Structure formats: structure tokens, C-alpha cells
Length: 353
Ligand code: ADP
Ligand code: MG
Image (cartoon, rainbow, N blue to C red):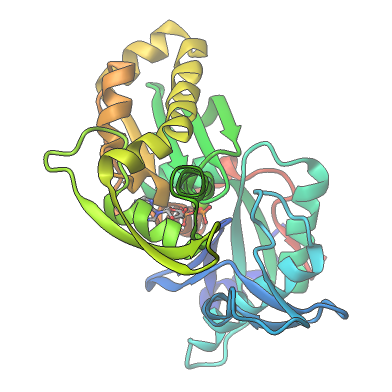
């Protein structure tokens, strides 16, 4: 029940959508778009587990911290393993978005995207973290739904549509019809695993130990899922595992494609599996509507082409693929009356009740 106070608060309130990603956290605010886009990192004091730095500042510290400080990604595996740290991170981002408003306004209503397939306990944890992080009202939405809304897919329509969201820790595949998820798949193979593949490859083939950041950079610059019109090379720096000395090795995009092939194959077959289980009427729809790809990992060169070729369905990269979830979550509040059915349980929890 909406009381007069709720109505009044609603007029002035801040509505925000949060994409609590395994790699990046984004916050979108009604009428303002994306106001925060920072890595999901927290630096904590080892002994007390007290957060010392959050977001971009914490990421800066990775690999450079003294021994009593560690930098972690609380959502790395797509689940909330460290509740208090996740809460600190949410609090920091919500407060930061709130502070960017120059007039004093009530605490925000918040919609948070959560990975599909999280347990009720995990949902509860995100919900509680959001409330205790300062939300006036918290609502949860499954990430693939938020991604699809953000990408502009017609998910409320009868005809089917499909999203493939490749993030850092997880790849989520979902087929929608009539505002609901008909088929979904969530796997722990995505961008991080690709970085790991490159590290392994360099270690095995060249005895070269490279860091995670270097691996990610190689993936982004010359990584691919499909032969490139012009193959490239890049020089990687690391430490030779035999001599223990620094070493630079030149690798080609062909080698990196080989390194990534295992993860890429797993992602592509997950999409095919989901299609195999999709009812034929919806598959027929998908042949028209196509497969929309979102998330940072979908930007791997040639991945969209690869998915299209192997599924025989048109595939395309969403506009601004890394902001779809945050924009979609924000949209739910803007169009609350039409889209509220998409919220996942625990909705409209509020401190006033
Ligand atoms: P999450 O939703 O899990 O936070 P994101 O959607 O923010 O993840 O995507 C992060 C992942 O995307 C990282 O693994 C990053 O390396 C990868 N990524 C970003 N840009 C590119 C690119 N151009 N090519 C390949 N991978 C990319
Ligand atoms: Mg994501």
C-alpha cells in the first residue's frame, strides 16, 4: 500500500539501478544515465577484514599491496561469498551516487541485478546488504532480464528473444517470452577464465609467467574467437620460470586464439544447448529476432560472428554492451507499473514497514 508519505518521497526520490557485476559495478540514475562505473574490487586489512579502499582505488592496489592488506573481488564467482565486504561495497557506491545529487533528497529506491540461479539465501543477502547500505526500498531483478531490457529487447512480447551476457565471472544465457525467462543457463566460464587460459598458455609454451592484468590486456588487444582479417602480434612481458629473469615474448593473435579456444567453445556450446531446449515456436521467432550479446566478454573479437555461424541465427552486439544491466535495472523503476512483474521476489522491502 502506498501511503501519502511514499507518494511524496517518490516525487523527490532518487531511483537507482545497480549492476553488481563480478568484474565491474555500475550505477544508473533516472534522468542521468550511468553515474558510477568502477571495478568490483575491495582492499581489506587481512586481520580484521576491514575495508580500506573500494572500487577503482582498490583495483589500483592489486598486486602491489603490502602483506597485511589484500585486494579481493567479493563477487568473483557470481555469488556473495563475503557478505560484509559486499555490503561495504554497495554502501560505498550507493552513497557515492547519492552524494552526486546536489540537493538533499531522501534515501534512494534501489533495483539490483543479481545473477540468475542464485539461491534464496543469496538473494536475501543482497537484499539485506542493499537495505543496510542505505536504500529506502530495495528490489532485485535477475541480470539477464535487466540486460535484455537495457539492450532494448522486446521481452514483454509473445515472440521470443534471447540474450547472451558474458561478464568476468559468469556467462548467462536466457530465452524470453511474455516477460518471463523460458530457458536459462549460467556457467562460470567468462572473461576471467579467458585471462586464465592465456596465463596457462604462456606458462606451458614459453615458460613465461605473466600477471592477470597483462593477460587481460592481451585478450582485449589481440584475442579472438574467429580468424581476424589481419592477424596481429603483441609483446608480453613476464618472468621466465626457468631462469627467474624478466623476459619479453612476442605472440601472435593465432596463438592467443588457440589459447582461448577452450573457453570460447564452452560458451558457444552453452548457447547451442539453450537453443536445443528452446521450444520450436520460439526458435522460429529467434531466427527473426536474433541473439543479442551483452557484457564485456562479448566484445572479444569475432565472438559474435562465431556464435552466429555456429547457431545459424543472426547475432549482434548490444549497444554499449557493458552498461545494459545497470540501464535495464534503472528502467524498471522508471516504468515501474509496466515492468514490476519482472522483479525477483523480495520486492518492495522497505524500512518503513
Ligand atoms: P561483470 O558483469 O561480470 O562485472 P563485465 O560485463 O563488466 O563483467 O565484463 C568484464 C569482462 O569483460 C572482463 O573479463 C573483461 O576482461 C572483459 N572485456 C572487456 N572488454 C573486452 C574486450 N574488448 N574484449 C574481450 N573482453 C573484454
Ligand atoms: Mg554483468
